[in-house]
Image (cartoon, rainbow, N blue to C red; front, top):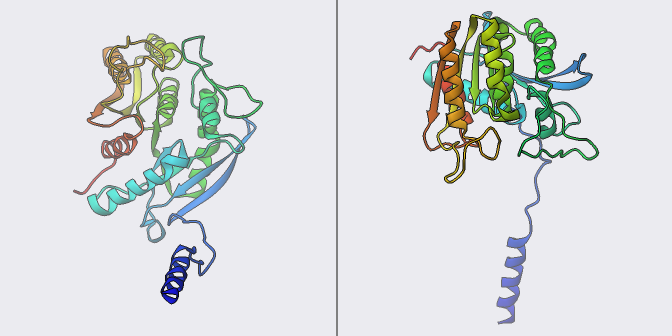
Length: 302
């Protein structure tokens, strides 16, 4: 009996003991990707640019359309893998995917709140907090960040890669979609195609609605194609009254209202699509928005 107990104890100890790794672990690396450091001269901040090259890049001489995606820590690997899969299995045209990182030394929340928003929010029911100790929340630098993309990132990509800079695609979700609207309503020719998911149109009491009206008063054209996507669950909870605040925003209704305003102004050169994805919410909808947004612009052989 004692021998049996000893054997059972020994076996339990062996099973409970953690396995000893045969070799040190190493980070997983996405194939055909590169990382470039970029100093934003005007902003006096440092960023990184992540680049994913198409499968055929090393064996071809052609130039490729370029997908620029913000919130890169999440969105870059998602966009890179979807773009690759759509080419391999659905015959979609290949593209270079460029991810734009958050500022070095800043948290993602702090960096995107500052770089992707068009204004400093006026007093409202929404309360903002900083996750950077000793630093107050920062907002309203979207215009400067957009200039950084055009003046620093574009030349880097144009000089370093066989990029067709006449076929640039912007991809942004949530605050990133707000950044895309900032670009669209100031210099729409910056990109040829915009994929804007769940834009935070509630921000600063709906400031982008005001800016679209101001744009319409001064312009008759808006040369760009825009794919808007949003989850059907991004609506106002029952019992709440809709307002231009994060807590009481109906993001689906906001997007439909914004699209209706664009359509009413009949801008020359503008084409828009709005797609509401059933059963998806703010957290889950981005892969679908990106997939359908690419299909709305890139060519396919199938």
